[in-house]
Length: 144
View 1: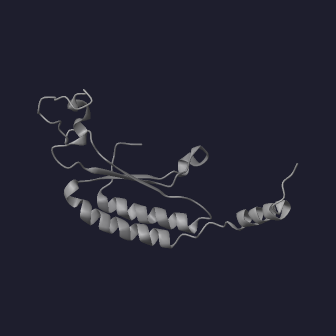
View 2: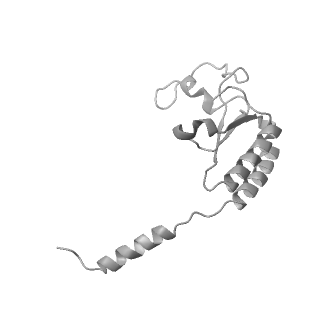
View 3: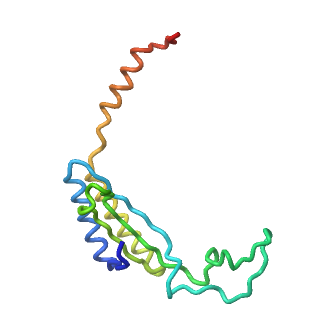
């Protein structure tokens, strides 16, 4: 994946397009992931000396558990195309700063709900027929 991240507005536009193309296709998936962005020049490690924790491990090993300032969040979306359709794979990512998370999540939820509302439910009728067929064959009797 390239290191270029979209602006938040571009991310939302392309995410809505991704949901729309998935909805109009015969089948498909959209994968949404998020994680905090804990590396890079914007983050700094605490300047306090390493102290020993109850496990005799220095706390400096786990400095990212208690950051000095809130960390940005990396948001990703993909259509999940794998090896066979690698040319058709769509990868989107953006970085959201901590002070803008609340507004981001409000807009993200709107787009997510709109995208999910247009998707069709999976056809599981074949699965139900197969399960019903197994019940008729067995009818509770054990084979010896």
